[in-house]
Length: 389
Ligand SMILES: Nc1nc2c(ncn2[C@@H]2O[C@H](COP(=O)(O)OP(=O)(O)OP(=O)(O)O)[C@@H](O)[C@H]2O)c(=O)[nH]1
Ligand SMILES: [Mg+2]
Image (cartoon, rainbow, N blue to C red; front, side, top):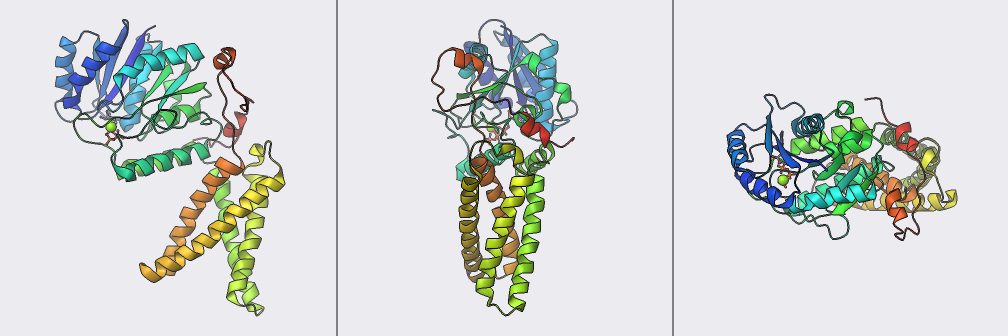
């Protein structure tokens, strides 16, 4: 088995020697390491001198132009590894947050399970995101992963950590030329664009060994753009229906008040009515292909309960924030409606129209208990609503 470990680096000099030392100790014969470097400092020199002393082959691809950022670097690494004949490519960060000792286990898991991709996950089994700096980073990581899974319910059905930068790929199953790398999250791009058998392996995300984080707010914005471009389909009709519902809501409110009704019962009536029309339109236009096994009465009950509670909470929150902190009701309302929209979308994708997990055939053959799991070929659901870009 030939394995190439692809390590994207940007100013990671102080981590190189330690990473190569631990990789050399962990990897079986026939493996090599490929640094894809966009550094502006002396990291390339450090990599060259570590390579000269290393007990396994270490290659350096220093890019003159950092096209596509981190994702572009990973794709360049996959291309180079494929050209050099690697059967498996393992992508990992250069700051030792990803334990090198796990690399062989990822590849073995892929081989025994017949998988194309083995995702090292912080959010499954004994996995842990401990090394993420502070609760805000943890929350952002969790929330953005959940959003991604809601937008790709089928492709990411078996993936608890689509945001991870640690994964193994069967080299001939991914065609780098079909990818449009941008931003920080290449795994998402790979999984969203190609139909692949995916399994997960738990891991504990460590603290950075040395050097500084390159994660930034700008990268977060790029991530949302990436998601949006990858999946324009499912969220976008949801957004159109949400916007129509908001207009309808205001029209009913105005009409009832004009007919002499007090504004409070008018608000309640218009909320109730638009929750019903939103549900009917969503069933028809957004989630039609995901209605699956539950009854429509049950989906309606879930949707109504959630949207109703959400409307109550949102109104109370609005009142509280306006009274206490930001005396601009329109502004607060606009922000709350947008946040509520995302939360509502995640709830409907994760609960009301949930897609169940599958297991790879090799695991089935090994006789692992798979009760309650199903394996329908429903990939067209994701494909059907994917935008051309
Ligand atoms: N080649 C290349 N590598 C990059 C680029 N940006 C980040 N990296 C590398 O990608 C890996 C992940 O970046 P980190 O800064 O560790 O991001 P993170 O793990 O989300 O953030 P921390 O938890 O703070 O470390 C590291 O090995 C970086 O050196 C880039 O533009 N080009
Ligand atoms: Mg890191």
